[in-house]
Length: 101
Image (cartoon, rainbow, N blue to C red; front, side):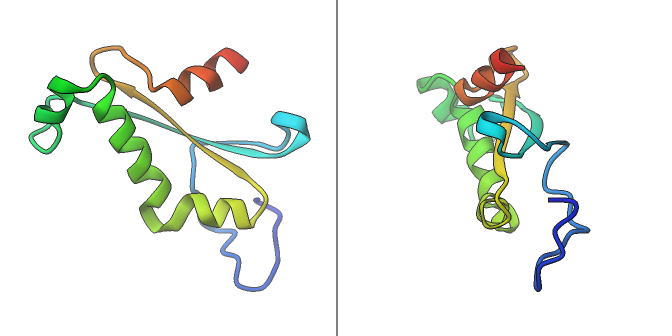
């Protein structure tokens, strides 16, 4: 949360692109938008077999990078990676966010 002053909380960190002070049931949310390519060398084989593999892998990376999801949870913020693929496909979690918006 931008206004959090609790000890050890880094309120200068920007874990997402958009902070919504009131989302589901009045709880705050942090939307982190990203676009990834299923043609990347590290994911292309998996992406050829599994629908949305690149978006899922990137959303997982966003959650774990710098412990972002856990830090947001600790601050009472729902962290939501909102990931699309260069093919135009959106991760299922991202679609839920977009429909709610």
